[in-house]
Structure formats: C-alpha cells, structure tokens
Length: 358
Image (cartoon, rainbow, N blue to C red; front, side, top):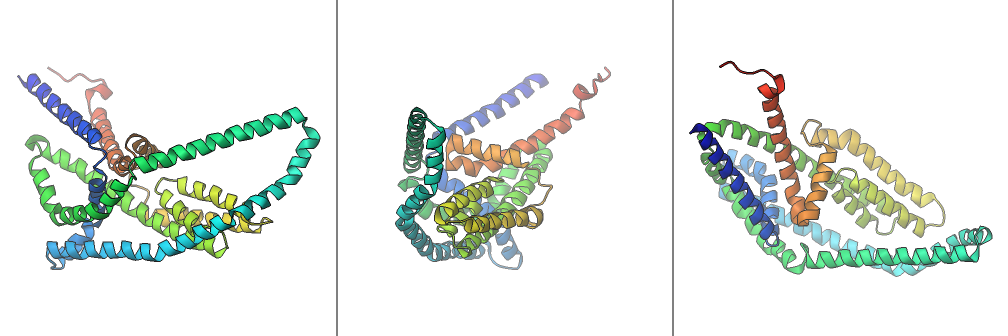
C-alpha cells in the first residue's frame, strides 16, 4: 500500500508538471507581459519590504515604488531617445561616405590580389562574396521578420506598456499573501525540505539577477559614455547595447568590441579611433572582472557562466524573449534540485554500496 501511495504521488506530481509545461507552451504568445511583470515585482519586493518595516502600508509602498519605477523608465526614455535618434540619423547620413572610404582603403588590397590571382580566381571570389552577402541579407531579413511577427510584435509591445505596470502593481502588493498561500499548500511531510530548496533558489536568483542587472547598467553607461567621448558614431547605441547584452556572460563585451572596432575602422583613416574603442572595452572588462562582478554579483551564487549562457540561449530559442525571462529561474531551479539530488545520492546506499540490515 505504501509503495502504491508513492507511485500515485509520483504520477500526480509528474502529471502536474507536464500540464504546467503544456500550458506554458500553448499560452507562450500572451505570457510575456505577465512574466515581465512578475520578474520586475520580484526585483522590487525587497524595497517594498523595507518600506513596510519602517511603517508604510504595503499598498502605499507598492504605489510609491511602482510610480517611481515608471517615472525612472519614462525619464530614461525621454533622455535617451532623442540622443539615440540623432546618432542613428547622423550615422545613416554618413554611411555612403564610409562605404566610399572602405572601397578606397581596399583598393591596394584588390590591386595586390590581381597581381597574384588569375581572372578566374578573382571571378570565383566575387561570386563567393556575392553569395555570402546574399546569405547575410537573407538572414537579416529573416531575423527582422521574426522580430516583427514574434515576441516583439506590436501587440506584445503594447501589452508590455499597458498590462505590465498593472501586473507589477498587483503582484507587488499581494506578494507576501501569495507566497503564504503557496506555502500553506506544500505537502506537510516534505514542507521543510521544499522550503529549504525554495530558499536556496531565492538566494541564487536574488544574488545573480539583481547583481547582474546592476552590472549591466553600469557597463552600459561606461561603454556608452566612453565610446561617445572618443568620437565613435553610434557610440551610445553600441555601448548601451553591449551593456544590456552583458546579461549573458561575455556576449556583450565581445559583441560590442567587434561592432565598435568595425565602425571605428570604417569611420577613421588610421588606427587611432580603433585603439581608443578597444581601450574603452578593455577598461570596462577589467572593471567588470575585478570590481563590479565580485562586489555586486559575488562568487558563491551557484550559477556557472556556461550554465547561464546555455539557459538563456536555450530559452530564447524555444520561447523567444519569454524564454529569456524564464531561463534564469529555470536554471536556478535545476541547479538547486541537482545539488539536492546529488546530496541525497551521496547519503544513500546507491553511493556507499551498503545494504541496510533486515
């Protein structure tokens, strides 16, 4: 009877997990504003708790935090959008000049190539270049099409603007009540063990997500201001983009470095600007590795950079931007459960190869 009971419990939990994953997959097109709101509410909950502890009502604390968050976002957009628009329009107006300059700088290379290559080889190279150019253009067109028809379509952008703030408010206001309700539903026999695992997951997520978000913001400011100061066209765009992409370890620095050097090479006639662009990213990388990450993220949060990269890329491939938002919680859950399962295995007879008496 006990064995049957364990089998029924196992089937119940596996069936519940399967239903949850199926619902998540079927509803993935409408979940983005709710998941985004939940993520932001989770990030802001400690601040609401601090305001509550100093005597402010939870509802008023939620109103204050939500309004402050929205004001910061709107103010940031008001300040950044005109600057970004000016940089992009200026860059587009100078693209023909960059193209002509690149053609002139490539002329000696083409002349040298004609000296050592036959007309047939040159024709093959031109055909290959045209083929690769067509492939790149097709890839970009496909990417833009996916962005416009996928998770960043107009309907989802509007839902993020209008629905996400309401989700943030209600979740932030009722966060403690919801967590208490979930806690009351835990199986009594295993409640303490489950609470311990939830606590470990919360420690990992709060330490990594909040710390890494702060690191990304600081890096975006360093890269954006640094590249703008050295005179790189689209410096603020490239720098802020590199900072945001730094949420995936190493991706932001590498992408910004390559794009920045390419733009600097097209913009300048010598190596002065490319050298200054490289210096900005080297300084940012040194600050991140030796100051920002150790202080703000820490070294003992339990999420290895390779595991983070895999989780974010896998989530994005499966569910788009929604998958990126869900990737880190899932990675934290898998990491904690794997550690717990390993501890259980090391304490069991499967590891020690001892048979219990009787």
